[in-house]
Image 1: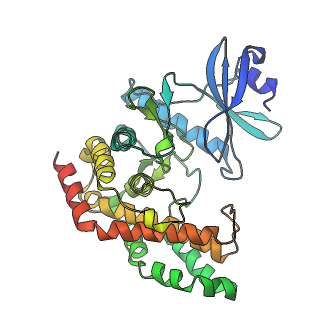
Image 2: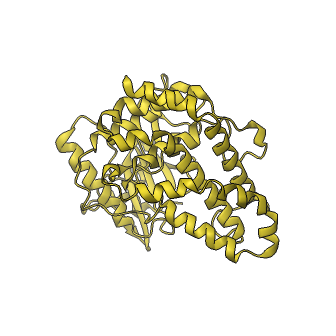
Length: 354
């Protein structure tokens, strides 16, 4: 499962550890090492998704060095170097890294209480606040164009043109419904070059399981899984939290009547996030906080529909209409969010005043 030479490369005795698969992530292969020398997390980086693992390592090192200088008490999980001082160990063309295991920590795969949503959002907001002002020039994208809605919308338009007739006909109504929300893509196009909507160092994958919580109290400890830490917009992180925290069901749910926007979860995540990062926001960023949820839900929806129209070449499917239903799920969530815009905008306004 894991070669002893890999463990040895990080200065540890492979005979002293029990190795088990760990976590619920779908991208990297993650293992927990437990033994007389302590506990560690060992990961094999998925080089299909992350084509340049050295970019991940460099981005994390730049952020870690900045935080160590400016905010030395902040818990920022950084890789343990190899015996030769490298951040990554390359074995048979595979990239491995070792990171500390945080004791008495846990993660949850979905927000089951508003408190969990608040604590997770606060941790993402805290990291964004502490990294506000860092020089971004040396950072590179670990996944280029990851949240570029302009590119995703263009791919959607191309998929409509190139789709096989039977798929296009089957999805005709859903295509029309997504096209009615094209103003979301138009807004992004105007925002992305606005100097008052500048890049920040963002996490880009703010699902709740990327925050470690205290086992007993569910209080936030720190952010984890920093592979997508790279320059981006505030709407990426905030939008992904709205997309994944406010509904009681995931994007896999096929009973669309179960999809709703839970006001108390929306309020909790906004309170948590804005209590930390709010003071650093420009007026333009403040004006587009509700837009963040629309942006991310819409982008994920058209990505699912694009893949369906293209013949399911990107997202793994378990049945023929899987990506179609995922797209329908996200459209439903978008509609539920927009229905409550006036009420939820008031929640945002109150959070900004606190």
